[in-house]
Amino acid sequence: MVLAVMTALSPAMAQDGVPAKQLFGKITLPSKQRTAPIGFYAKGCLAGGVAIPVDGPAWQVIHLSRNRRWGTPQMIALLERLGREAKAEDGWNGLMVGDISQPRGGPMLSGHASHQIGLDADIWLTPMPAHQMSYEEREVVPEASVLRGDMVHVDNRKWTKSHERLIVRAASYPQVERVFVHPGIKKKLCETLKGPDRTVLNKIRPIWGHHYHFHIRMKCPPGSSGCDDQVDPPADSGCGKQLADWLNLVKPRPPVKPNKNAKVVVPKQLTLSSLPNACAIVLKAPSVTDMMTAEYHNGMQSADSQVAVTAYAEEQPASSLVAASDDYSLFVPDLRSVPEPAVRPSVQ
Image 1 (cartoon, rainbow, N blue to C red):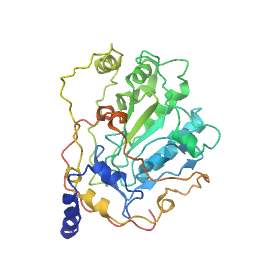
Image 2 (cartoon, helix red, strand yellow):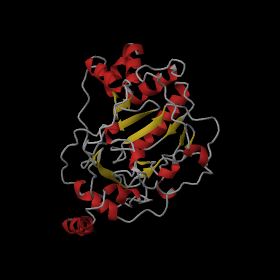
Image 3 (tube, one colour):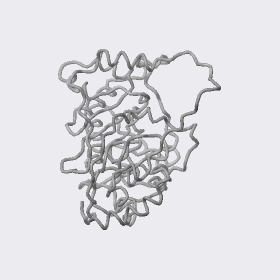
Image 4 (tube, rainbow, N blue to C red):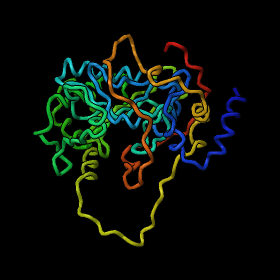
């Protein structure tokens, strides 16, 4: 075990000047290891990731070029369950599934600070269409906001009871740690939820962005010794002062004249040595043979797909990236030493 860690760490040390997102972002297949979420949501990696099928009876995956449909079996099973139940009971035609994690998790080339351990997933606030989308359609799905122009109130011409039911259902699952939405959506739910539905309001957390999609975060699965859970959300509904403060933060303000003398702050990049040691082993581990080998099938036949799945997103200019503050990666805990993941069994 010690020898394996040291062997993996030697090349990691040599690459330590390279941002970890470049190392993890270029890998197209998961490791041939038993599934293990390693580290924290915004500082970790994923051993033995499994993929949600591109198409299912109640979901379609979008943005396939990003190759971010990978997670733990628990996450994939939960998304499939949410899609089926929302379609059957909530009037939601099916999920459009956005980013989950990269094949081996880790920091992403663009767009997120979290989504690193296979326990975060983005779901569009637009139901999937009745037809099977083409590859091209999936790449350009509109970011259809449900807010008014003031960015504080939900637009009732766009918001439906089905939106409410979908978010409440996601938050109701005991495995879900948090559901992140825009403060304007949280405000709407605080105003409209009644009775038992209000018991999940503490799990529905306001955050930047998230007005055209919402974000599901699962708890670390039982037995995941190398996974660090986030602190439980407060027990109260969160509909008071905290929400008021968030609404004040997100309301539009007059443009500020740029200060030519302002110091440009370069964001600090995570390197491989700043992640748990086991991530060096995950990065170096052999790959599964192909994507189909690692797709999640829990006794269900997924719909046949004619859509090709490509590798990964190229590096994007800094001006096009989503700020890390949009992904609530505050309070990252110190990470314990994580054991080496076991080899992936033939059936998982």
